[in-house]
Picture 1 (cartoon, one colour):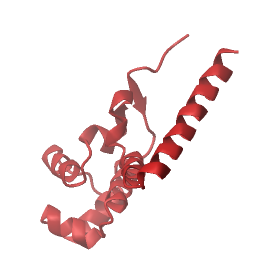
Picture 2 (cartoon, one colour; picture 1 turned 180 degrees about the vertical axis):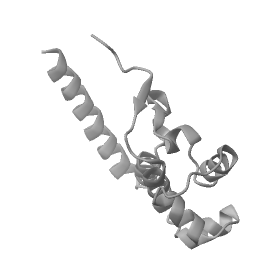
Picture 3 (cartoon, helix red, strand yellow; picture 1 turned 90 degrees about the vertical axis):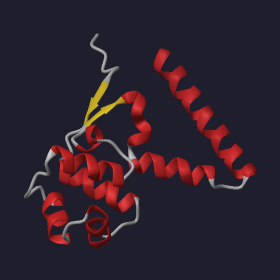
Picture 4 (tube, one colour; picture 1 turned 120 degrees about the horizontal axis):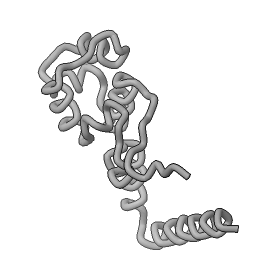
Length: 122
């Protein structure tokens, strides 16, 4: 049995990942362009995969978007799940819930995980 323990390779393109990250940060292309010090046309070309950024540009975009270059190019260590902006946003939303709601939700998640693991070993 081959284990995919270390890396998850996502088939999404750089542009799709960039778009997802930008939207997770609630930024428009224009706002990202301003932070990146470029034009919104350039951001649009990156997102449509019409243009590929340099390594330095990709690093700067990743920093602005609180992710990693590895995530943007579709290589993500399993242990680095928190660099997935969609998952991070969900976790932040959970953290902002009132304590009682947060505890109830986490208990539900824990029970779901436990049931799934038990089902897998049967």
